[in-house]
Image (cartoon, rainbow, N blue to C red; front, side, top):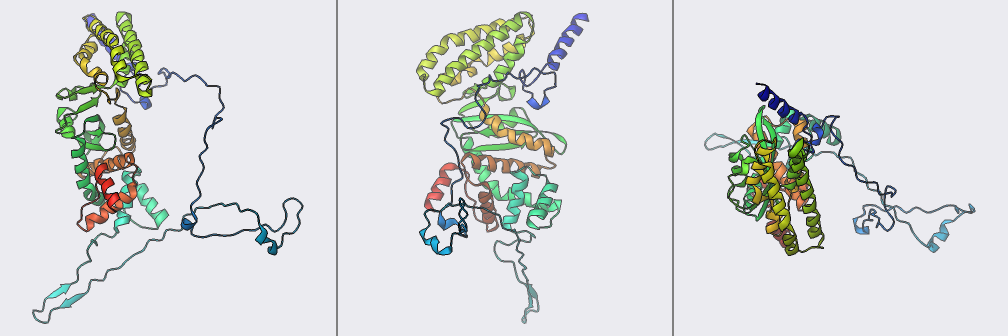
Amino acid sequence: MIKQLTARVEHLERRLAQTSQNSSKPPSSDPPSAPKRPEAKPSGRKPGGQPGHKGHRRELLPPDQVDDVKDEWPTTCGSCEHELPARWRQDADDVLRHQLTELPPVVPTTIEYRLHCMTCPRCGKLTTAALPDGVTMSAFGPRLTAIVGILTGCYRMSKRVTVEVMHDLFGVEMSVGSVTACEQSISESVAAPVAEAHAFVQKQAIVHADETGWRERRTRAWLWVAATSLVTVFLICRQRGAVGAKSLLGTFRGVLVTDRWDGYLWYEGLRQVCWAHLKRDFQAMSEQPGAAGRVGRDLLDARKRIFKLWHRVRDGTLTHVGFRRKMRPLRLEVEALLKLGGRGGTSIAGSCAAMFNLFDAFFTFVDHEGIEPTNNLAEQQVRYAVIWRKTSFGTHSPAGSRFVERILTVRATLRQQRRNVVEWIVAAHHAALREQPASSLLPCIASADRAAA
């Protein structure tokens, strides 16, 4: 019993000592007692732009894009205060241009459709006129509906704050229920382009995948993300295991970059395990006493040397062939350390054994050019959704979850391609009301459409 209780105390102490530096916990969960992150050495330079830095200034708009021009003339000399009469203005030497951009007051327009009724003289039936094409029974127009969906979905505003913004900035009165209705309308408008983007991601050569917790109807759910360089898709489902991963990845057979979570063990293609996660695992090992700590510190040292070589590849000072050659002894060193840590009797035996089973996936970025050793791309994309979750506490229905995953997909993908999010969503909603296909989220199709236009 003493042995069991001692082991349990050690396990609980290890969990209590977990921070964002030695586990997957977010930095916001670190207690005040957590060790500080290593600070960068001061450079000794003053804050701000450094000598030789090219300044960034606001460029003046060309004259044809200026709405109004106002000429101002000096009336007295700034030096001797001599009067400068208007007749001298034709001899003026130079002009200084200053442009002021202002927002005009936004006044919404309201259109009243009067649907007249007429009685047929033949059959006596009453017929009511129909609304024009593209006009629905909604009280809000396409652009206003799109703006509401953008405020809640792309700018993370709550429904009640959105109601206040619509009132204060645009003078539009609406209820919280109307905000939800606008969200669902936008969700349906972008459904087809999002499904197309999801199928596109599943056919790519390299995909970064990650998942984070979510809430749907106060029950546990998971938000999944699959990211490529130009298209990113999100998916909310109740499963975190292989079922959820398969729903996200579908028929994907390329190189999958993930953490070493067991939910991806079913994947039979090439896989790259994130070294940022491995670093935290090694850090946790290094904090153990005795032989386990020595193995962890040696693994951290090996990781440091690996990334020193990788940074040379990224900077162009080392070829990938040379990198692969220099990595051979380091791979053998990491393999030996994992075998040593996996021997029974140490607190890290289970972790080392699990890592050794994925050992080949540690070095896919060495064997194949063009693969990143970390999963930073997926983690950067999911960070926006994590902040949204902290303020909204998730969604209350499957329909709400569909809106979240679709609007997150649209926002992330368009920003990756440097396309205007607002104009795309407005155009997509206009097209949906006219029962026309929305513009594609795929970069190749979108470029072709812009060239044709």
